[in-house]
Length: 247
Ligand code: DC
Image (tube, rainbow, N blue to C red; front, side, top):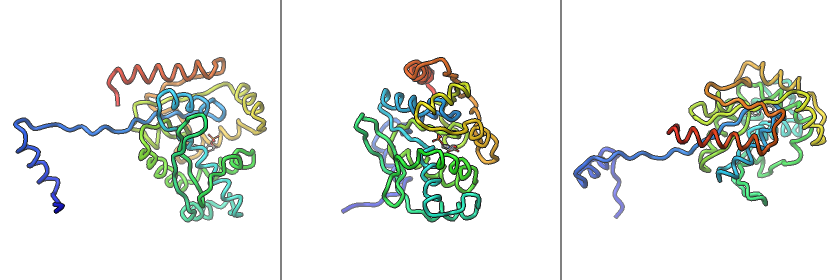
């Protein structure tokens, strides 16, 4: 017969079975927070770090983009904060952890069971996303969802406010940046033409969780660095902080 015991009863049982009281430390999943400006190499480097460590990759920009895309699809006025907040409260979403062909484990936010992988990468969706990402109710919703990703284990999470707002308690914070010319070149090479300066300005100047360097973050300007060098630097810093016994 299954018996139900209170926490206090369990502690008494544990104590009576041992001569010495035991300290049980439950291991918390580790979160590596990688924030930074648009096209600063967050995605490429976060994926490389995820693979090297075997951690699950979370692209929080994709979550905001999915809402931006959804609003455009459903003709929700992206300039009407209330309408967007209502859509965000009501849309039907789920989180899933998938393994890609290149053996990257990644979290996707599905809407109505669908992940709009390609659709969210257009310049139109980028511009809409930057607007809806400034709405406090949207940011509250996203923060809650992003914290739920811990259910999948150790994470490498990229975004704009991961170290400052979503997981401020983590000891593994990074901030990537590169000169505007270099970042524009990278986006053009990806076939996307967009005004990065305007988007950076909106992302850094919004009142709610703006893009900024988290306290204790390692800042890396990778204008003249390859992704191997950038991810190598991140991994070395993680190793150093782990050795220091942080986290
Ligand atoms: O990283 P990205 O370019 O895919 O992000 C798309 C937009 O979402 C960008 O304008 C900033 C916003 N964003 C945010 O405000 N907070 C995050 N954690 C991630 C993205």
